[in-house]
Amino acid sequence: MIIELDTTGTIIALEKILTDFSKKDTVKSIMVLAGNNKEFIPEKLDPVLRKISVPIIGGLFPAVMHNNIFLEVGTIVVGLPKAIENFVIHDLNNEDIDLDSIVEDISLNKSTSSNETFFVFIDGAAGQLGQLVDSLFSIFGVINSFIGGGAGEFYPNTEMVSKPCVFTNDGLFSDSAVIGVLQTKSEMCVSHGFKKISDSYRVTNTREKQIISIDWEPAIEPYIKVLEKDSGIEITKENFFEVNEYYSLGIERIGGNIVVRQVITYTDDGSLTFIVPIPNESLVCVLKSDSETMLEDVKLATTSFYKELNHKDDSFLFLVDCVSRYHLLGDDFKKELALINRNDVPLVGVLSLSEIANTGTNYIESYNRTFVIGLLKC
Image (cartoon, rainbow, N blue to C red; front, side, top):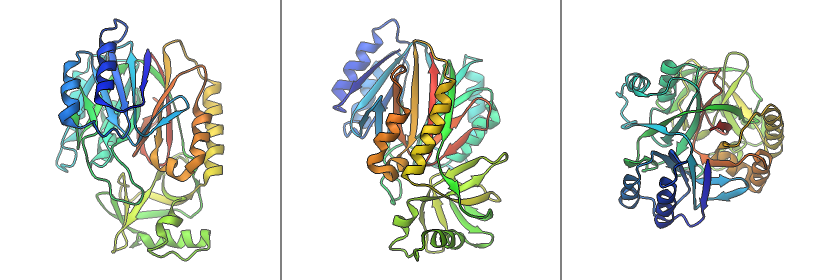
């Protein structure tokens, strides 16, 4: 396994790395993690991708990381010693798409059968993310490991817009997901550091990525009541996003696990809007965190994970870290990256618009405000 970092974010630099990698007998497939590279548009990128015979999987993300290096513009290219099988799912904004059937076709057409890790890169602004994750679990269960997240651009408190941001050798796509199957073992660490500060509520009406009502009230009302009680601040439209920065909604799972969902905005009718849908009848609660709590959680989670880490020479760490954690932590994000980084195992990573993971034993989830670390044993 080899890793090369380009800090220019140009097509010329990427083409040179891809060409060099494709000539190496030890490189059987390539992962490309790109930041906010203005040149990476279909008209310029597609011809380069299509010239490379080695399988490529990649995405454009708000930022990329290699060890302690953080880049909003730049590209990380990973040459893998095993071939990756790529599958593309298009038209994710089509509510009538039969994802179960599409994912079942992937299960029938992939050539590997054991010790698999699935990379899942999806246009973070596309629809059906929750449904895709449900289909992956329905078809593949808990035997294999999954890691990935939402690609694209993110600006706090603004509506996300779909753009071409995931790719294979066939080109750069929007409204799509790319799934790469790599026959290799992996271990996962998933954590967030948000704590429950409210009673449990029931979601009583939903619409796409919105919760319309909680316990039959407009969803914003019980949410704001908790924020006001905890913060001591009267919430208005003008200060909502500033106060809301440290809060989230959590889905309560069996066994006490809580999945974080970030509130992106709310509508005039009092509905809450999310990146990933929350199913109707879900039990939810209000969560809170801050920089100190999040960093302490990172320290505890990584210490436990790395204590049991069993890696070999071609292993690497793949980090999928929520872009909203970056904005919440601010200058402290470099402390989080330092806690996650190890000197004896190379790390590559992305800031994501959502995080997708399971551990090989648990339900596949899509998360917000969460970090996922995968140890890939190539």
